[in-house]
Structure formats: structure tokens, C-alpha cells
Image 1 (cartoon, rainbow, N blue to C red):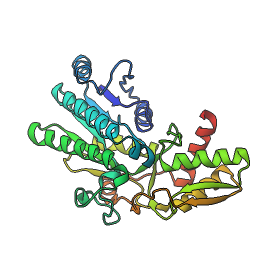
Image 2 (image 1 turned 135 degrees about the horizontal axis):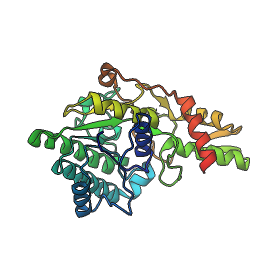
Image 3 (image 1 turned 90 degrees about the vertical axis):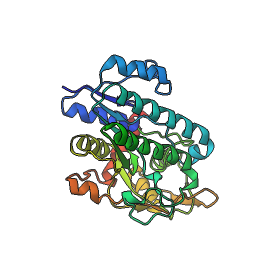
Image 4 (image 1 turned 30 degrees about the horizontal axis):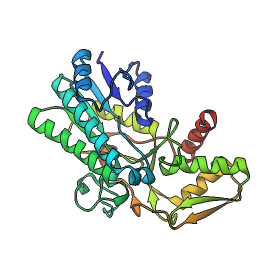
Length: 304
């Protein structure tokens, strides 16, 4: 049986991939930060040399929402560049047969045509509120393409849409919009608040994918896709942030109202992926947004 390393196994995506592999009877190889610091080149080289890995899911990354990206631009750029460079190079050098690199839909231009197809990469300016993370992810894509071109390394790059699910980050300082809304509505319900504040106008539209669906897509692509070109993973449908807030409010059971804060940034006006390339391969998501939010809220209530 192949030896499969999931980098970032404690994160939202990495933990879901580990669980998905277990469904197939595969025990993924993992390494905690106390054992392996992916930012340390020497440690990464030594670890790959010692473990003879066959496949890698590169899900390790420094991630966060608009506030975190805007507050820590140097860390988002530096840490992600270093992690990607170390893992991709060491994987190739030590004979890994295949590597899957997790990118992000923020790699696409701020005003890209909607839905965003894979060929819209590098056709326009990035969204300023997360450009540091986006630049790092684009570099990771290009590194995979370069190592395939020069060395024949089977590295694929997967671009997921906005993710959510059990194990998400609910810290209001650096979380993404959906887990932040879940926490806000939960705490407002508990305190008897009359309103919940929503960042921005509520008009931007976003697409959301449950992390278990992404994990299933990654395992599918590891077996069914091998190409230098990136491939999108998403629902292929989006929702307004104001409408999303109403849906979260309903799931949580909050009885108050919503209050927009137009002084806060909206981010890109719309982010919807063209998923026709993945659909043509035979994969589609299965967890609908309302059911996924309820599942995530149940986890939050049990683990907050």
C-alpha cells in the first residue's frame, strides 16, 4: 500500500483528507509541528529522506480572513512561500510519485469574468485584501508546473472555493466569513442581543464548499487527474453575504436583526468558480449549504 503524507493534518482541509482516506482503509502518515517544522528546509529534507513517501497532499498553509491577511501580509507571504518550496522540492528530490497542492480561489483576478475558469489566472489585478496569500499560492502553482516541465514530477494543483466545516477556525480576529457568522450569531443568541453586525454592505457574493466534499474531490483527483493545468473545486453556485447571514441566523436560531457596517471592507464583489472541468471528469459535491452549516454549527456547539 502507498505511503501517503498529509501535510497540515491538524488544519481544516488536512484533517478532512485524513478522515476521507480512512474511509478507504488508508492510514495517512502525519507529522506534528513538534516533529516536523515545514518552514525548516533541513528538517523537511531529512524527514522525506527517512520516510520514503509515495504521495503527498500539501494542505499545510497559513490561512485567515480579510482582517488577518490585511494585518499580517509579510507572514502570509513568507510562511506560505517557505512551506510550499520546502515540501514540493523535498517530495520531488526523494522520489514521491505524486503531489497534490492546495491552492485557493483568491488566485484569480478581483474582477475576473464570472464564473471564474482556470484560464483566467494572471489575467488581471488581484483583490488587495488578500493579495499576499494569493501571490504565495500562485507561486506554488508555478512551482508545481515548473517541476513537472523540467523533471517530469507528477504535481497537480487544486483550487478550492471558500471552505467551511467541522474543525474550522472561529476566532473573530482571523477567521473566514462563514465561521465568523456562526460564532457571532451563537453569541448574540446566548446574550439576548437585538442585532448582529455584518461586515461591509452584504452585497458581495461568495461560493461555499463543505470541507468533506473538498477532501473527497482531492482523493478523486489524486487517482483521476494528472496535468500541469490547475483545476477548480466548488459548487458552481454562489450566495450573497447578506443572504448567507440570514441562513446562518436561521440555523442558529437567532431571533434578532442584522446590521451592516459599511466601514468594513467587502472584498471582491463576486467569487464563483467554473467547475465544468471537474464535473466532466465525473465528480460533483453532495453536501448542500444549509445542511453543511447545520453540521458545522453542531460541531461548534460541542467544541467551542
